[in-house]
Image (cartoon, rainbow, N blue to C red; front, top):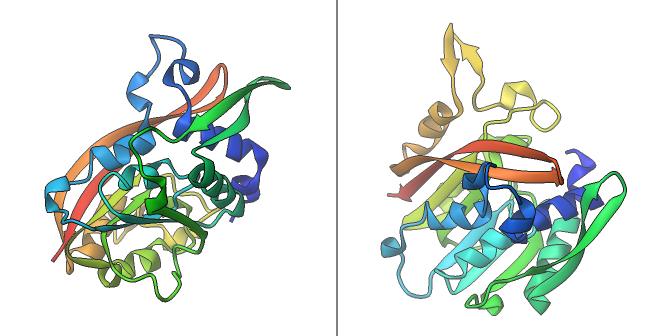
Length: 252
């Protein structure tokens, strides 16, 4: 896996992506504002709160610096965030312990500005914990969950199908699996023979969602499918605007 997710640049970009003030992240009215607050929307637009009972457990796989993990804590009494990046887990843990964390973000060139990431009021931080782990080979003893979120994770895994194969054993009957992916398959992260989409097989195009249906359909029912735009700021005048494919599944 690339070392990018251990770098200062990645930490800065993702803290801003997860916690940044929208008016600072995108100061122009003509920009793609529908891509803001993505880590929040991954939960709010995909979860079905009516399916959750009291005292539920949540798991955020590929949690990065933790905003979606905290958002799951609005619905669950116990939430675990797991990420492969040691730096991301450090930053998320600092957010859990103090509720705020100061960082720098890039203006242009070598010019930086200071900002403070803050966990929103109303979220009980004591419900959340973070740990380093491999989403493709999760540790024993995690237990079972009412909700598992995999936001923009699949196309950054060495073996995404192996990761998905763990889901039936992790999710309670009636529990929810929430997946978002921009389907950005790169050999830097995933050998092409492990891609879930973006290739031809027997003369037919295979798309990522085709593979999700094939892998999950024995154990899960599709509840919804939607498009979720997101915006990552690189510096004051350069952004990545992408559209993730979101889907919500219910364990039989």
